[in-house]
Amino acid sequence: MNWISWLVAEIFGLFFRLAPLRIKPGLYRIGTPDENAPVLVTGNYRLTVARLWKRLRSRNLYLLVADSGGINVWCASAGGRLTHHQVLSVLKTSRIEERVNHRRLVLPQLSATGIDGRQLHQRSGWHICWGPVYARDIPAFLDRNFQAIPPMRRVEYPLGARIEMALCWAFSLSFLALFLLSFLWPQAIPATIAIIFAASILFHLSLPLFRNLFRPYRRPSKIWPVEFESGGLQTLILLAIWVAAFILNTAGSIPLAESWKWALLMSIVLLTLTIDLPGSTPILKSGTHEDRHWNLVLDGNRCQGTGICREVCPMQCFDWAPSGKSMIHARPDDCIRCGACVVQCPVDALFFLDPEGNRLDVDLIRYRKVDIWGRRNVHVK
Ligand code: SF4
Ligand code: SF4
Image (cartoon, rainbow, N blue to C red):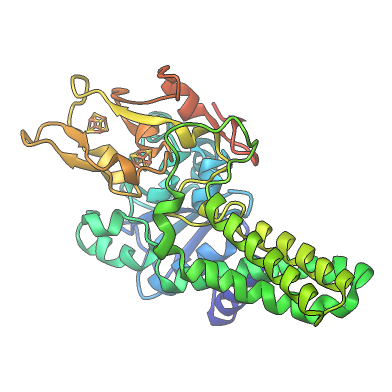
């Protein structure tokens, strides 16, 4: 890896983020690692590896790049593409155990939804250690003797990330619009692309203002196959578009057929951008996932106070109980049902209830991952 590869990965990562961007799996050296060097694991998403290299290039360590199908760590873990199988495979093929004199493996915190830490430990003999969420915190994490402070364990959606997400959605949708409109309505292409970029940036930048609108509903909707968590916003937008078309028609400023065509085109664009806006953020639950209505329960009688759930929770929903010997699920409204805590709890003290109040088997969460439709259909055991 060098600066040119980093720049290429950043540019491609921005515009083609929705497509897999692979780098060859295997062992990568950063600096000149010796037998005491830390061993970190990540997926083979090119942008992730480039960003890790940028943050860690002044360090000496080994980076084990597991085959996550060219998908980022969190999505690959949730979708069953990055599990203990892929990590075991890269551990074996890299022969890393011949290069270091310790057995401590630093896994990305966001892989905790997919990698079963206990299985990995039992099958490999390596001690598992959960690294921080962001690459920028890894140097401090290493300097603290592999300890992360709570802010390092929380996922954020700051301005820079929102702009990146807005641009990557706008670029992908513009590409599709360019292709389709070249056949159907070429004159509309420039204005459509301008509106796509403006709307995407507006939605993602203003997300904090209407974040509470997107919190998962407690009761499931039987009406829509894909739940319109952003239904209020979409209704307002569609109303505005069609009222504007009506006014323009009445005022006679645009021919009738043309204004309805524009209204239809803009409705499609804006519905596409907003249909699962929560799902394109890291801080809200996707409106298409079946587990959006599940409720997490912590059985205080079973909890042994290992603290692992607190380590892996990307929303930092857990606090220590006043006794300091067990955990409490202190912020359930922040929970995005990622399942990481359920997968990692060594005594199965954490589980989900479905909307009818039925307890879901923890193995369902551990070994069945989310498919593209948001259902737990991908078996990984
Ligand atoms: S991981 Fe399980 S046992 Fe450990 S603190 Fe959390 S709930 Fe308790
Ligand atoms: S509490 Fe919710 S957000 Fe946190 S790890 Fe568990 S399922 Fe994920």
